[in-house]
Amino acid sequence: MSAAPLGEQDLERLQALLDALPAPLEPLDVTMLDGYLCGVLLQPRRVAEGDWFPPLLDIEGRTPPPGTELGPLRELVLRRHAELDAAIEQRTWFDPWVYELDEAASPSETVMPWVAGFATACAHFPALMELHDPELLEPLATLYMHLDPEDLEDADALIAEIETLEPPQALAEAVEGLVRSTLLLADVSRPLKKKAAPPVRRAGPPPRKSSATPRRRR
Image (cartoon, rainbow, N blue to C red; front, side):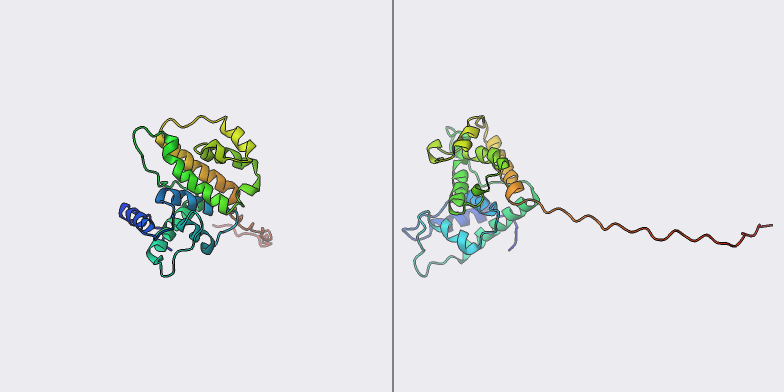
């Protein structure tokens, strides 16, 4: 699957396809979907498409009615999945699908749907959260600080870490936090493979000294 970035028209088409899913399905919107895909890709073990694709079609886990056409939707989702996968694997910047709401919305309110999608993935696939690595705490807190504290049950350490953080004052800062946290989490759950050291060449036998007496040039 190509990792070519989705353009603005692709995004609009993707949202239209999600909106067109028949009732009673309640699919993720494109912002939640983006966070959801990152949560899926950060799992320490690869999640099969057959496991992660159905939940994005309905937040209640309902199955689409028979005959529902999912091909075009699946194609666009897989393209974004591949694009994010490559960025995470290479530890490079990506642009989260976050959209400004209105002038009164805070940066946290604006990125909250993306984080909610991420949390949805972690609820379906808890292996990342079960790693219990201290290096996960700060990036997770940077993400979950945008959610309602009441949603963070049995997460005392995470809540305590969130309380040490200052909320972002600008949307650009909040978005940077999404990307930075994603890549920091990948350092734990998807560590980069160490390149094999080049083979050490064994020194050959020392050159043999000639016993011949060199001739003196006239």
